[in-house]
Length: 117
Image 1: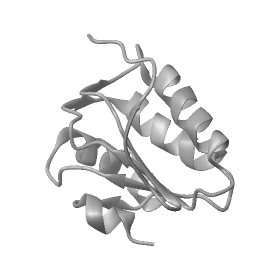
Image 2 (image 1 turned 45 degrees about the vertical axis):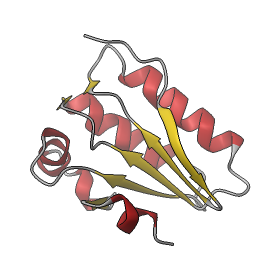
Image 3 (image 1 turned 135 degrees about the vertical axis):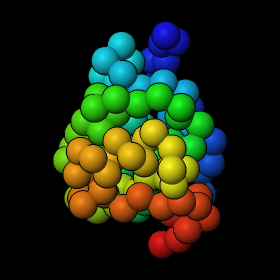
Image 4 (image 1 turned 90 degrees about the horizontal axis):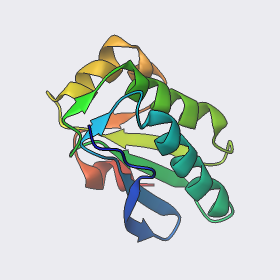
């Protein structure tokens, strides 16, 4: 397994940011990813309105990935809306569906759709 200490930011627009998550999310890297996402959001908290977690490059994700998304949602400042973009029939999308996270966090098929304010 590859270990990624933090997500990589790929897009930074006024009031919006996209963080691309790694190809694998599991117990070995989910806590560090969560800390990295929250640190980024808190540094940018004043001007950030929408934070998108991009899971389109994530091939494997277990329940720790769902927990990561839920923890980020719960711990973000209330004025920041969390959205996820994931391949419709990919593993992350299915994990978010099975765990019920999709009820609390909007999951989009398309990045441009997720970035709309």
